[in-house]
Image (cartoon, rainbow, N blue to C red; front, side, top):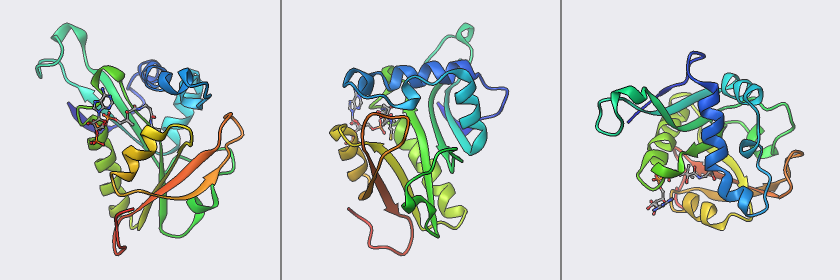
Amino acid sequence: MVVRRWTPGDGVGQVTALLHRAYAKQVGMGLRPLAGRQDEQVTLRRLSSGECYIAVCVPGAGTLSAEAGEQIVGVIILAEKEPDEGPPFFMRAGVLAFSQFAVDPWLQGAGVGGKLLGTVEARAVELGSTELALSMAEPDHGLRDYYLRRGYRVVGVWKWPYTNYNSLVLSKRLVGGEGGC
Ligand SMILES: CC(C)(COP(=O)(O)OP(=O)(O)OC[C@H]1O[C@@H](n2cnc3c(N)ncnc32)[C@H](O)[C@@H]1OP(=O)(O)O)[C@@H](O)C(=O)NCCC(=O)NCCS
């Protein structure tokens, strides 16, 4: 498995289907995350608007047969430019945000998400930011705890117009802060 930048040559359909599978758990909770239902056009717009990284299983690397071809198993976007107004915290100096973070359910819990998160955290530092933020569905307490264990803290609440829930805004100090949560 390797993490690399997404390019327009990578399958938008593959990413869209992966997002739908990954967010099915939240959909099953009665939530309506955009990533759980967006079409390929929306996926393409979102992937193109920021720095997108994908985790890819490479044929012959022991996971898949060569016939299966490259398989996208994870995705994350750094600094996506959203058409809708975002949380004020995202606009603060030194803050970058990530979004559309997902790992295919069959591979969850194996560290792929950790690698994608580590990639955007390192990239955010490289770009000079001191905080890396995100928003997530408030009712998903397991997900909130996932971020808390990784040094993120709750910094606010936001309501996106296309969802039916409040989102928690979380952020992690990347340099110079006290760290922790
Ligand atoms: C959040 C997400 C991207 C994390 O990806 P991941 O590859 O599972 O992440 P990791 O393997 O690095 O860590 C998973 C954690 O869950 C634990 N875990 C164990 N078995 C698991 C399983 N079957 N499924 C999920 N997590 C499992 C791991 O031990 C690890 O725990 P830790 O926090 O103590 O380290 C992934 O769960 C996902 O796609 N979720 C649905 C979409 C979503 O909610 N995205 C975030 C929106 S803000």
